[in-house]
Length: 127
Image 1 (cartoon, helix red, strand yellow):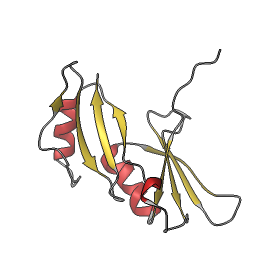
Image 2 (image 1 turned 135 degrees about the vertical axis):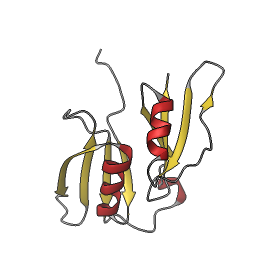
Image 3 (image 1 turned 45 degrees about the horizontal axis):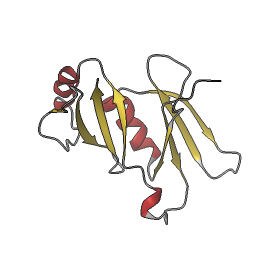
Image 4 (image 1 turned 60 degrees about the horizontal axis):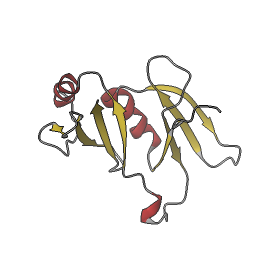
């Protein structure tokens, strides 16, 4: 049986240029590809890490602005090897922090959240 994993998270955005800048300069994702959907309306941007072909985040502009609240992404998590170093790196940017400090769970996992340009929550997570 084939291994299952999350392929990517799709985020509906109003301003794809602003959102690409945020995810590439603040979060550290790389823009892999930009295309217009076959419907001729949606603009798509595929972003990922480390020069890999895989897409971790897909940005979608041109979708209905009338989406119900259930259609929005609450958060997605980015695995980091050193959550403290990432916290300090992001403190040097204009990233809007949702957490004043790193949270440590009883199992030792550590994380903090920032907010993206569409008010989505981005978690930086260390196991």
